[in-house]
Image (cartoon, rainbow, N blue to C red; front, side):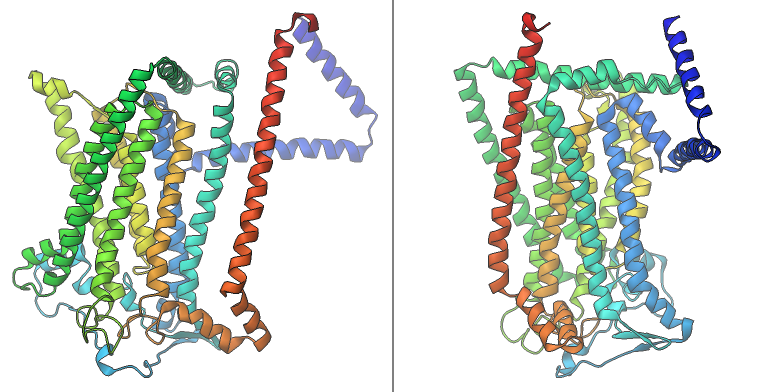
Length: 617
């Protein structure tokens, strides 16, 4: 009764206030209300257009927010790869298509390499002619050779210097290089923004766990929900979050009650386990290096008549990398259980170990390729600066390796779903054997599944420079993987016995993906600035390295004053003082943040004293 009377009194006061206003003020207030209502309705409509929104909410309600964070992360990568594809297609592939068909009165300009030995310009891709068998096409499709090698998928196709569109000259080498920088910068800024936002939420949660409980218990429910199924999903989501909080608090209390003898035993065991992990990593890296060298030395010389053997030799590095990425995480998952960490930290540490394995395996593969491309001894590299006999167009060869890694990774994910997950579900359901029942239904491993897509995304970032349309393949791959993982989750998996917090998971996924991007910078920087570009193919065949396009542009288009300014910025005389000043600024910001944190902690202590002091009530 009191609430109704208050509402009526409020309405009467509003009506009395509006009666004294002019027509213009009344119209403005009415227009603002209508505009806010329209914006709210548009926002509600756009929520239905968000990709997989209903599916992800359903997954959250059935399996918790931790599993939901994986599918949201997968949706983010689909969008990111699609935007990268738009960038590369618009600035690299589309100008070639326009000039090929003479759209907008466009033409192509070619320039022969100057002061280059003729032997360096020989590049004859192995295209199939005449009657071709089906398995030959399949071989080409899986390995990126044959008919696929001469398409716009790989670097060697873009062997032009400029595109004239009417009277405007399109500097194609510069556009290729800037498009590469653009997709890397876009990925970095996007991930950095998400990581900073996630870090803020993570910091707030860790700073005051009691506040997190209060928010969930007293303010966690959405009272706008009217649909019973949506209400059930929200109820389950809150239940999983509270279970996670209680589980972590229980483990923290257990850790705090450990004796000195128990701590010594656990720390000694952890040191021993980390030595085993290091030995496993070194064994994997050495195997990848030896297999890559063997594959490169024997794949080109393999008998073309025996195409199955040739395909296996070409895919041998991908097979060994995938085997290492499959076996080593199983060892890590077994060992992590002996180290007695919290569930959230278990996921983080396992993910870091597996990420290091996967990303370092790509680095070892590229290092093995570079040792064959630019590290040749004797007179093999003298005329061209690289091994032109084995790698006349080495950028395309690297692109093919990245393409094979991505295709094989997708095949393994699909095969695991069809030949491991579903047969296991059928055996557990219909077989009463004790050995089978001991394995039980599978839990959805968030760390392993996240690792798969971070590994594939790092391959995409590295390979896009050598294969401009690789992001399109990655977009389609992740789109299909979403439905594969969703079907596997719903039909073969059970809910996790140890719930995982979604907020910390989202933040950590983005941080690990950011680490993958930073590691992808290294091979790209070496390829662009250090290794001599191929003289037989590609847009950079007229320069020593791909990076030389930038200095040449500055020398040709800028005045001497601008040249001195830009080259001065790029010199060590500017870089060293700039780095020192940047370190001082970072140190100041960190010190300021620590001071603010101490002030906040003191204010919290004072609030606790105020609440507990009875004389102040």
